Length: 107
Image 1 (cartoon, rainbow, N blue to C red):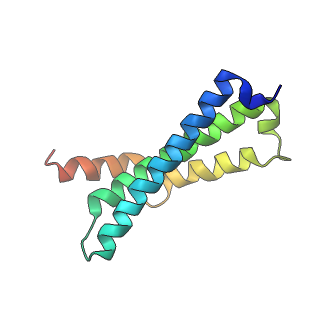
Image 2: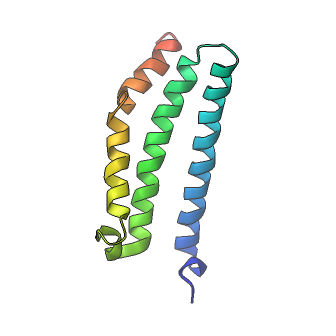
């Protein structure tokens, strides 16, 4: 039986797809606003925070789907996770992005 036929795996793949599409939308919105000549500080912060967190969770899900093979360097999934974690740190940590977003709400 194909691995995608199992409900747990299919559910994880669906969640990964949802995160990917949502990440694209928030990124495209920030880019569109920038193209309109606006300064999308809030939208850029949301995109940075969401995309980095979504990427990490998606990599963790992919490792879990692959089981022990997910940790092996042959499949490079573990490298994707390491790269995703660095994305959470570079160009402002997720916590900093959240502080920017909250600050723009007057908090």
